[in-house]
Length: 142
Image (cartoon, rainbow, N blue to C red; front, top):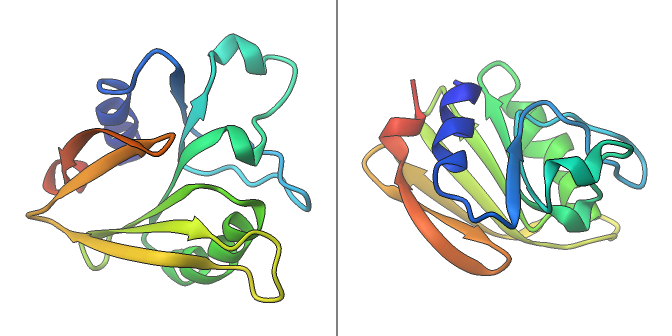
């Protein structure tokens, strides 16, 4: 599943970004390892260090048994760190939840905007505030 998403995004992103899987992101209070991330820069820029939140354009978690954790605990961590776009590939409901407008540090960190894309929808790929393409949600789901 993760490989399918990584390959689909890799095929459409501009050269200014790269896609990685299971690579840690250095947050103020942790180093989570999301399923897929799109990072601004070249892979070689991160040989000696992990990406910082401001370098992550898109972060994806694939959720089956972890859906509650991804919608709560991880959403707060990513929102607090200012990750611009956070996707939860919600396998039980066969949809992708897209969270944007992170709160940053706050008493209750979160995202201020959420859109759900169903299996028949096309999901926009937005990097650096610019839509670069869309992908069919059904092709990203098993």
